[in-house]
Amino acid sequence: MAETIVVGRIGRPHGVRGDVTIEVRTDVPQRRFALGAVLGREGGGAPLTVAAAHWHSGRLLIRFDGVEDRGAAETLRDVLLTIDLAEAGSPVDDDEDADGDVGDTWWDRDLVGLEAVTTAGVPLGRVTDVIHAPAGDLLAVGRPGGGEHLVPFVREIVPTVDPAAGRIVVDPPPGLLDLD
Image 1 (cartoon, one colour):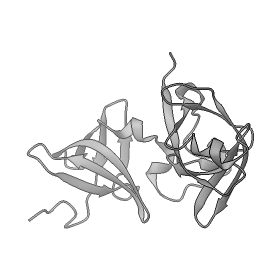
Image 2 (spheres, rainbow, N blue to C red):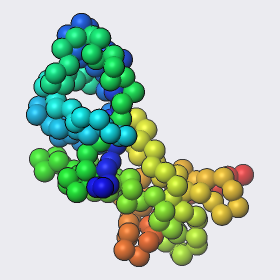
Image 3 (cartoon, rainbow, N blue to C red):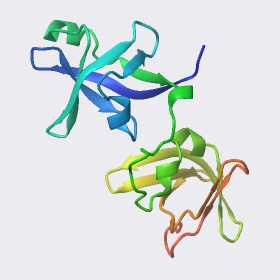
């Protein structure tokens, strides 16, 4: 069985023609939910093919082939949409410019579990999560003694990401790691 990645969750129906809201769980929704994209369902079920997609009031609305009314759309509520890991491609669209975020070039799964150390080699802990906040991405780094550091995932603060070595290097500005 191929490994899959969750790219979204179907929410409530929108309107009467079978549109559903999508809780987006991907950094490249324009690629994942493009017209004709075929998405799997976590836990099984027939794949769903995107027949229409558009943004409305900050929400992604999708209509799938064969889902023609609100009742059919309601049966899809809470379904997790997936793609095969082998089809994931790059986390950056080819036509996008990098904006200084080092998060542009890494999938979350590449980062979770990496050891975080300062530029001086002081261990900080392991990356436990990547938080996609409106102001930018944060790395949650679990401290060995409990608690966590939240580190902005920008090149100036995280200059080195080395999955092959199993670590990231953090160059914290004054006060970032002070907890007292």
